[in-house]
Length: 61
Image (cartoon, rainbow, N blue to C red):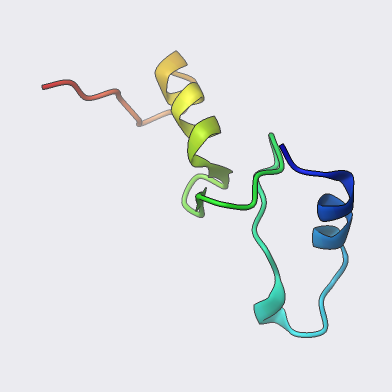
């Protein structure tokens, strides 16, 4: 998903703190990042479906 160049660029400390980009530590995705869980929505959904995130349950109605 993410390229090595983007991961490297994200690891370097930027000149200003507001330029920092959150990336998912599991897959490197830069979009749809959930700060509460420190991962992207796709990884969150996979782990939540497997029951590996404590306190998160799959809802159905």
